[in-house]
Every structure is written in structure tokens, then in C-alpha cells.
Length: 344
Image 1: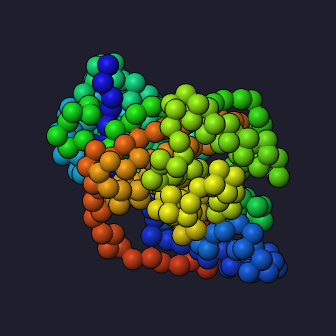
Image 2: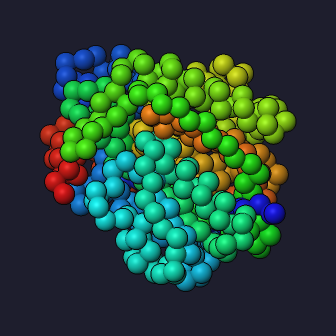
Image 3: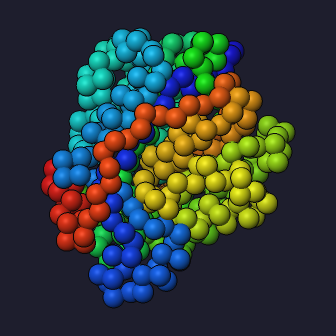
């Protein structure tokens, strides 16, 4: 049984931003203190007519263009999100048609908080390795929700990332998936009930025993199962709920700044939830060199992690330059943009 490999990849982040300092001022808090405490300078905000489907389309369309794979030969698409536009109407089905993929596709929407995108990556990887499909698409996309005044408001961003997988012997295979494993528990650190507009969370409980316990345990299990050393990893990317949590994990495992710096993108876009670790991966795939190794560990509240060991089969190349430019919103404009998100 051979391995699967990433053949194409893409990302999409809205052009709109809000400075974290502006949110802090709105709530009469010291901007410097807030920014320092979370390690995020600004976050992405969806446009008035953007949602998790439109962002998924842009990221997936770019991934398909980069891959060069004929769209009619892509016969699986799995979309991870906790902000699907419809409660009953699959984002994955919409993508099959909008992207002109093979209508005889395996397609499903996934939800596991912020690791739903990597869950899709695992599923497509399995389909490829089994020989059931030739090419598949995995997408993580979210227009994250943060109630005004809540701690989540300072980090909840918007964006999408997508990867096209095929066999490792494909002539355009870029990065091989060597191994993957998952760790799952019932740890209620974050939740949103049906019909509620905003999620709730257990405050500091989301750190330990949420994020830190799960990421730490998953890294240790992957090291034991694969026999690798973290010192052998050239790039690391973890889920980025803020700028502080990944750095704390890096310190615990004595990871270097060089191992972390390429995939640590949260400071400029915020926590893009299901897209977070995958956007970090797309940053690495653009810069990593042939033979370099990557460790990715996602995290989803509720709670669980997906971990991947990967090896670059050739050197990466930058994605097409984003020519849209960045537009900064004031707080009232920000509310208008995010309020439109929930008016489905």
C-alpha cells in the first residue's frame, strides 16, 4: 500500500481586517495588554457576502489550479467547518457542482470544532491509499464566531485552506503523508448548541485539560509510534487558537524558532478555526525544500487532535500573489460584516 501526497494546495483569507487594539478600546481595555496577552495583532473578517462556502470555493479552486489535475478526475471532497452556511444542505455538494468535480464523488461535511479540516485530510488520505479514488480534495473553512465582548472576539477570524491529494508517484506530487494518527476524548471545553449564534467556552479550562493536554499527548504518541525525533522535523504547525498556545507547546518540547516560524500565521489573521492549521501548512508548503520534514498537529475542542508526519518530495513554490490589498474596518463596520454572516 503506497502513500498519498499533496499535489496541489490553496488558501483564501478575506481582505478585511480589524486591529485587536480597536476591539480592546471598544471595551475600555488597554490595547497593549490585550495584544500582548493573546499574541495576535489583527484578525481577518469576512466580507458582507462571504461565508464558509465562498471561502472554501476560492481555496479549493486555487488548489485545483496548482495541482493541474483535471477536475472531472477528482472524486472525493470533504469539507470541515463549524460554520457551514446551511444546517441542512451540504457545503461539499455545492463544491462538487461549483468546482465541476466528478459528480460520482464521495462528499460529506465534517464538524469537529477546529480539527474538522484535518479530519477531511485523513479521510481523503485513506481513500487514496486504498486505491478507491485517484484524486480527492480536503478543505477546512470557517467564518468563526465570537460574541461581542467575549474573549473569543479578539481572535475569531475567517479563512479557508484546501489540498488536493493523489498518489505519491504522481509527477507533481509535492509532499508525502508518511503517517497520521488521532487522539479523542470527551472534554467539553467549547460548545455551541443548535440555534445559538455564538459558542460558549469554559474559560481557562480550554488550555488545560483542553488544548495543551491533547496536543502534548498526541505529539508524544506520534513520536512513540513512528520512532522519529522532533529534532529531525524541519517545520512544525499546530492549531493556533492564539499566538501564545503554540509557543508554549514549542517551549515544552524544546522546539526552535526556525522550526515554528513559517507555519505560525495567527498574529496577522487570527484563529481561522477549521482552516487554522491547514493555512499554516500552506505557508510551509510554499517555502519548504525537498527532503524537509513537517509535523502538523491540529486541535478541535470537544476534544481531539489529528497529527501528520509529512516529507517534501520537491521544493515548494509560492502561491499566486494576492493583489486585492487589505482593508481595515472600524468596530461598527466589523459588527456589520459579522452580523451579516448570521443573517442566513
